[in-house]
Image 1: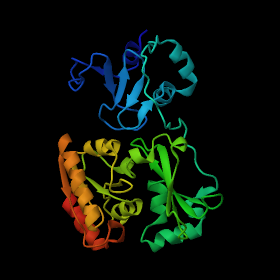
Image 2: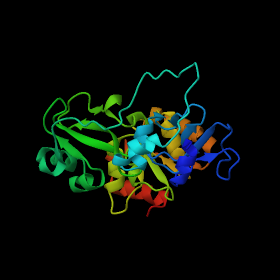
Image 3: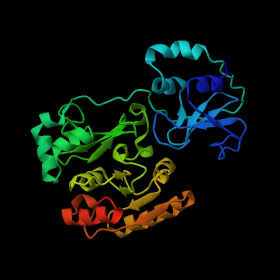
Length: 306
């Protein structure tokens, strides 16, 4: 059985050129579906019928077994792989892969539940955040030993709520303040994801901010959820732009400094190629993470969340 026949039999729909739903496909050798690894509703995962390879527009080359782990029970994978007649890649030129993510997320040592570490909870309260909410909604944990001791662990979850990478933040002022997972420790590079997107919805305008604490502040400052995600800075990768483009209305709320506002304007230009509406807003505060509840409330009302 060829791969596409197999996927059709398992109700995993790959769209091909000439089919309804496959209007965006120009090549007769490619088929597209949604990617189970990074989540999302657009057809980002491509299958090449000539060489049998899978590539996601968000996180790059996708290993067959990694994909199958998301589609099927682990104990069935070996048998299912044998039922498929995979094509042989006869191309002479191979794409050089200089970096490779892992099929399994690798966490640092010394992790304990956030609420079990009072110093970590005190730090969050000092930033007007509620540890109980962060532990529940964002799966934030505390690191109390090892090379990353005295840091918070912030898992980055995909749209299915599964962790694909992580970053950390020091609670004692150590440098660097933030230290993210290396590529080989991640399922998806931290540069290709948006923090907090697992709580956003495509039918709600998304508020984009720079940093983790900006997003946490916007989402938890009031009783109304903010549908806010963070891009880990103002220079987005193409993969992050593509993820953001899935939302019909995007509100970019970077820090108030001129350079950040210039980057916000440039991001708006990039998103203009994908349709939808992108709006740039600037708070009176230095950044969303330090904004007052009143200012956050105005932002949420502007977005239509209140």
